[in-house]
Length: 86
Image 1 (cartoon, rainbow, N blue to C red):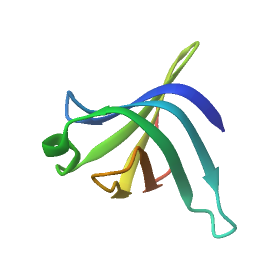
Image 2 (cartoon, one colour):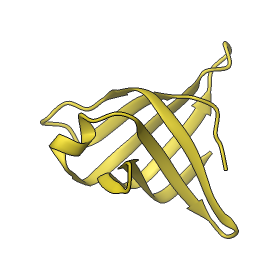
Image 3 (cartoon, helix red, strand yellow):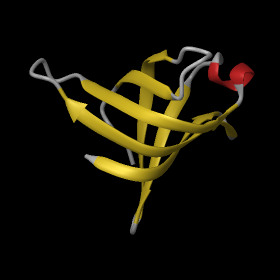
């Protein structure tokens, strides 16, 4: 799955806004995210639980984030996700 605009949230706070993302499922069934960061709040990104939110025409998909990797000098976020919820 690919998309353009999405967010990573902590509670009702925005931790990051992304412009361009892809979500895939590996052979073991784990969900993986790769996204390009437009803006981020470093404090909020360190909090838990984080949720990746991707909107679509009829609502939004929510993926709880299990593990997030974001280097301070990089525009790319990678994450391991749990199964999506609506």
